Image 1 (spheres, rainbow, N blue to C red):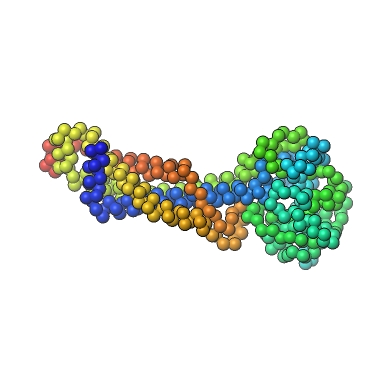
Image 2: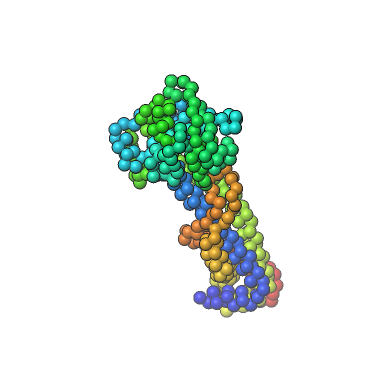
Length: 386
């Protein structure tokens, strides 16, 4: 307790120098929480959007299906058995049939992935209910990115050509009945959605599906299908988030080091100027270790004051930011990212940042204080450097 009182008295007595160090350290403290909160908010929104639009609680893939290998798509389908069909009927599974096709917008040729999905499904946010709009011919929904790339709009008609299971080419005119806007590019770029049953008839693949999206909390094993959990399906997003966190750590480390360097220099100068005080402490009966403890605590209190100061202006800032979010505008960056990101400040993030700031401040305060253990009390009282 005495050590804390002495440290507090000496810090307050230092005046402007103390508050400059505390201000820089508090800024580093707030910035670390802000950046990591933004990344965590992005991660939470990205995972939530991907689940709502594409993967739900997991997917069952045909053993030969590989979304990164277009050559695997043609033969990656199989019939649904009676048990699977019943789960499709109750809405716990959503079958998707995927095949390659070609469209000819304004006389141009563009290869697309044609995806058949039940129009009455409610598991995913895709506006599949529009596929039963009653439009003449084949109805389709596309994403905003696909609409921009193909220069198509709601109500436009475009020629579609495909090959059925026998390799025979066929063609029809489809009508774009809806254009949706999603923050998940993987369900949008180069993809057209049509009704599941209509696509089965087109391809001659009655009852077949390429993958099954499940909404079950604990998906069961299904014979003939490979289950892909969220860890697998969201691996790319997780890797992207980790890389962004790694890059941000460089800036955070630089700012934190600047603040810690200021504390280190202050402690070195303090020990140099206060040798008589150190000698007096030792003469009064304090051991060298106790005196080192006083100066170490004095430096560590910088971090406590920085946390208090950071909380004073950081909490209102974070509350305001959480209310309005960070608006990045309507810019397509090719990754799962919402136009407005709402930071997420977890208790773990805040506590870990506090521990980081306190521990590092204590360490850089202890390093120059070690010199005290080698000081001669008599010489220190005279103010002479050893």
